Length: 432
Ligand code: LLP
Image 1 (cartoon, rainbow, N blue to C red):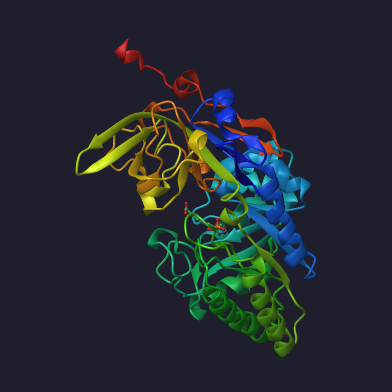
Image 2 (image 1 turned 60 degrees about the vertical axis):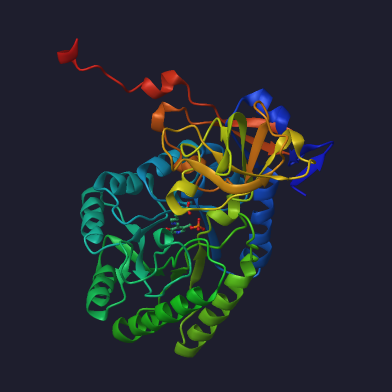
């Protein structure tokens, strides 16, 4: 068990969380290497070793640090980046460029140039003008690059509106309209600057039902068939995106195979039917690899009991280190880490320290009535889109990240200092 309670204290991957909080300070992101490695082991067992010619590209937007990229490399994973900044992080971590895929709905020419210079594995082309930019950069540099087209399969997934991406009305992907897609495919097949491999889709995020994925596979495979018929071209790669759901509160994470097995079966049957070799198949999980591997530790400060209304328990972080509750009304669970065995007999609202009424981390949550200032509060499942979406609102520094493994801890990202925050500030000469 990655999480356990011993002598009334919460332990995480063998580490006493209260000691971690005191050693490294709060707020503190804690990431369990054991939990992440277990996810990779599951992916290797149930996907990579089970099916030939498959790859996992960790969507590093979920949690992108040099250490995390290194762990992916050690585990034989590819990665998916969506910006020059993520790409730079990966290169600085020593990650091989040919195992990186580049997604994004508005890649800047400078980012594409950087990717081509590094010799990136694939660019997932997301719009109609992007090929122009790629071709002109490759022409100038005398290089070629492998591409896939990201298409919007036109399926609606059951999740928060902000993280649906596969429906037609989306800023992501190219709609599956023949008159839009096929001229682009033909052009890519004929282009001397790109090597066209196939199609990519991503239906949405935090999904627990495999049916939108299967509908998307159906939609894409129809176009694989059309590409074969029209251009005599057998698609060589299909990327099924990520989005596999995780447990924050009551949800139950489904194994990867629940999604991948039926999709692989469908793709295989389709390929046999139209007589093309099975393409390479890639998945891009982000959240499901790191979410449950993370927790955030805070110190409790002011406690405000408004009789008959609500009891607010404030912690020393908030929306700056976890924007998800404010942005998506995401639900979390937490516990007073140094009083972990006490009855949870008090309904409270755990809030942050930002000057913003919406800075609520957990609303109406049962915790011990013995909670007081100085206690350590732990919020679970914060490993994905916590640190990676952190911000400096109110000029609160971004917390440190510590990696834990079987009772040992090591710093992964040092805490931002006040000096770090103002490092880029310059007082205009006209003001001096
Ligand atoms: N591939 C593509 C093309 C994506 O756009 C995404 C996520 C992923 C893979 C990884 O999805 P995952 O396995 O992590 O669900 N900030 C939001 C999530 C935004 C996801 C955007 N794209 C959140 O905190 O819920």
